Length: 212
Ligand SMILES: Nc1ncnc2c1ncn2[C@@H]1O[C@H](COP(=O)(O)OP(=O)(O)O)[C@@H](O)[C@H]1O
Ligand SMILES: [Mg+2]
Image (cartoon, rainbow, N blue to C red; front, side, top):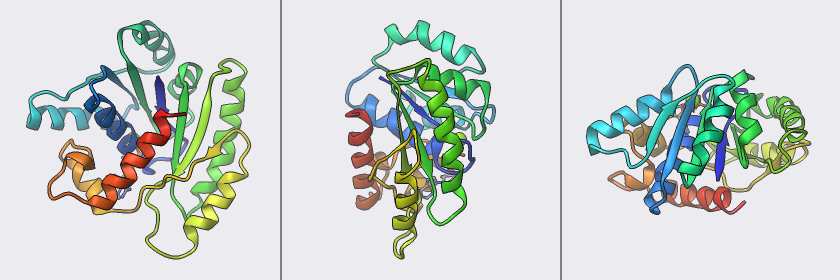
């Protein structure tokens, strides 16, 4: 499967999602390729930190930009069981190229912010891509969900109405564990001490995304 973590906002959890999905998927024994299509190369940094502490990341990581995201991924797809592409937080040629080869496109967004309104433009991007890629399934999910209050629910309601995107109910909470794990090049499932809630949320999202 080709999974793209995208959207047109920075700092919403695209890289956290992409790297976590790669780690969880490769832990099931599959040969996974992580494609870093963001100029800021955060996913590549994650893999570098990870390789230093674990000696082997457990997956292959490359950087691609622009049209190469489509062309190279098409060439590499037969060589891997799954490919996860992390894109930058803007509407770039790389993100559009990724949408042309994606099976699943997941867009994280934060509740209680203007984020949810940027989903409209993402929905338009998806509808355009679907004209060239009819297998594309696009979903959005809440990241850094609030522990309490009505913001999650409000954001979920708005997200459910966006044409082109399906809202999935598998939020990740706003938890220190996600930040701490990423800083060590790990997914929360690999971190000690374990944060049971973070692990359960991540597993739930993983199940959702890889069963679409
Ligand atoms: N669920 C979460 N809880 C707490 N911090 C998070 C969560 N998801 C992401 N972060 C932190 O937010 C920052 C931005 O996340 P990142 O995945 O780099 O976003 P993006 O790739 O969309 O720019 C990082 O410091 C990351 O560790
Ligand atoms: Mg990123």
